[in-house]
Structures are given as C-alpha cells and as structure tokens.
Image 1 (tube, helix red, strand yellow):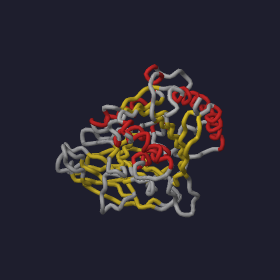
Image 2 (spheres, helix red, strand yellow; image 1 turned 60 degrees about the vertical axis):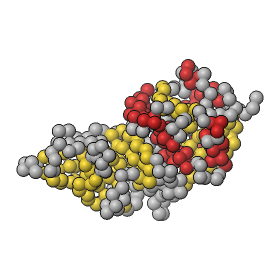
Image 3 (cartoon, rainbow, N blue to C red; image 1 turned 45 degrees about the horizontal axis):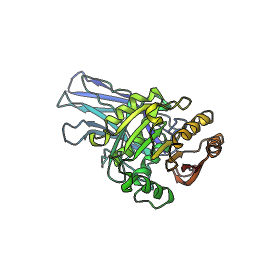
Image 4 (tube, helix red, strand yellow; image 1 turned 30 degrees about the vertical axis):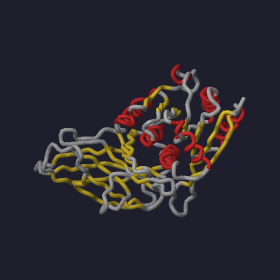
Length: 358
C-alpha cells in the first residue's frame, strides 16, 4: 500500500483579471513510513472541489489527470479555475481513480485494500489562500459507514495512518461477515447480548483510525484511545469528525507505557484492547508488555488484538516477552497487502491474545 501525500499543500493565486484563480500543490506517493516511493505506473486525478453547504454534494469544479511513472519522486499539480462565487471554499482531492467517476470516499474491504490511498487537503479560498498542513482520508467501510481521518502533511510518525491501522480498522468493520477464528472471537466479544456495554481500549492510537472506525460501527461501545501527548490534538480533532451519536462514547487519554496506568484506565475492565503497528520499536517492547499485562490482569476474558506489518526481525522480542508474561496467543491471521506487479508483497499480521488463567 502507498499513500498520496502533500509535500506542499495547495496555495491559491488570483489572476490579474480577478476572474479566475490558479491553484498549485506538490504531491508524492510513498509507503506508510515514507521510506519507499511508489514504484509503478498509475494515473493520478486531481480535482478542485467546491465544499458542500448543508446537505449538498461536493462536486468537482475542475479536474486534471497526470501519469505517475516509475522513478518519479514528486508530482506538481496546477489548476486554473473560473470562480462565479468569490466566497466559495474549495478543497483539492487527489486520487488514482478514473476522473470520469468522481468519488468522495475510498471504498475498502479486507479482500480489496487500495493500492494507492487518495488524499484530501484542508479548505482554502480567496480569503484563505493556502490550506492547512493536513491531509484527510475519507474511507467507506464495508458496511457502508463513512470515516474521515485527518493526519499531518508533515512527516510525523505519530500522526500518520500506518498500514496495520488501516487494515485493522477495515477488518473490525467487517468482522461480522468473516468466518476465520479471529472474527469468531470478535463476534463473541463485541456482538453478544452480554457485550451491550463493551469497553475498548486502544494503545498507540496515532491519529485514531482504528478506535474511531470501531466506535463508528459500534456506537454503543465505550472506546478510549491512548497515545503520547503529541497525538492528543489530531485524535480529538478526528473524534469530532465522527457523527455525534457515535463520538459521545469516544475519548482520548495520555498513556505512557513506561509509567503507571492512569487511574481511570487502571480501575477499568476492558473487553478488547487494540494495538496497531506498536511492535516496530524493540526498545519499547518491555514497557508495552508490562502495560498489557497490567490491563489484562483485571480479567482473563480481555481480548488483546495486535496488528503489525513486520518490518524487522527484532520485533520478535515483543512476542517472546508477551509469552513470558503469561499472555497466551489464541488466534492469528495474515492479510496480504496490495503491491505493484513484479515487487515483493507484504502482509499485515494479526494476533489475538488472552491472559492465561492463574
């Protein structure tokens, strides 16, 4: 999987005639960590879109297509748009979809993950001639639910979507119709009558794609997203993008793995604990496992779901430590990621654990 990213978010210049504007941006297409450029050929469609008001539909005002070719590092985008309404607010939508069929959302399913994830910039206008340094991803989950996630346009690891989070969010939204062992565990835990007031904790939430997606499909669930203080703003902004019925049971808490659990988390009993791409740093594995052990010690029924995209052999230390802590592996599953023909594929691996009975 690769992601369209704004190296320079759109800026607007008014032509001397003042009858039109020129909009320019600079994008790239990279892997989740930005360490690999997209190696294939893909047609990119960029659309200047008038923001909708009320219940109106966003519609493209002007579209252009460009070819991303192997070996490219960046792609400049330039649009000239006639403005009948000088107060209109606009966004730039960039995707690899056919420009003849403008689609606001990226449709995802566990069997059809996107090869290139589209991007929206923040709003801009004649009054505000450059957009904020954010990228917005708009996803349509398999059940039809819509999720909007903002991440920073800058290279901030903590405030980006990573592949494992993307896949886990999709898998959770589809667990009711899947038949593998992990989905059976999730159905039993999340969907049984006894789970009406299910409590979910996410560790290392980043920008919050996993927790907000689960809270969207299960509005009755209480979902607490946790991470370091620098993630608070982006997570809380993304919670506010969720519809009011679902977001009322979502919250963010600062949780440092090397410190004692916050009081509210320490006394709670969680049905599910979620982690996505949290095992890449071998140095943090002991503190992470201690945190998981403290949470799981309150109930042997707590289901821990770990999703990871294997990146380095050193990540195995997490699995060694979690076994030593008496937390048992009960299910595992590997999800292949889409890749360019001729290039090695990768996977997101998911594991379910429970505290061993004392």
